[in-house]
Amino acid sequence: MPAPAPWETFPHDADVGVRGRGATREEAFANAAMAMTSIITEPSNVERHDSIEISCECPDEELLLVEFLNSVIFQMAVRHLLFSKFLVTIDGNKLHAILVGEPVSVKRHQPAVEVKGATLTELAVEKGADGWVAQCVVDV
Image (cartoon, rainbow, N blue to C red; front, side):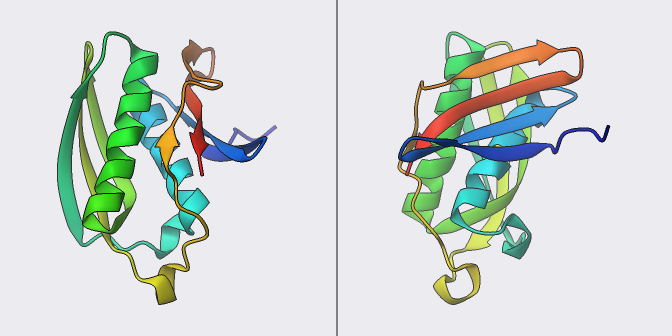
């Protein structure tokens, strides 16, 4: 049986779940962010011209995932950027990430929806036999 995809979305009422998988917690967080990008546009259509850095800190890894995704959403909104690469490092309760992407082009990216925020719904960050999974539901 083939390995599961590194990221995916899943239906949840009127919202959408995002799930990232990886060999490390950092990879799972990065792939959850990639799943979030896929809600808006096809990630392979987002070129990697611009990069910005973000940092966040939370008392546990589940809340850190929500804070990270909300920080990505904030940067997309205020800078009018889409991201297709996420370089994440986590040290204890602190996360640092480099987000790489480009300005939104309505014609080229054809954004489907606007992601408004990551929620605590179906929130999980877990290490299993096949690696890490990081997921939650995002409000669209």
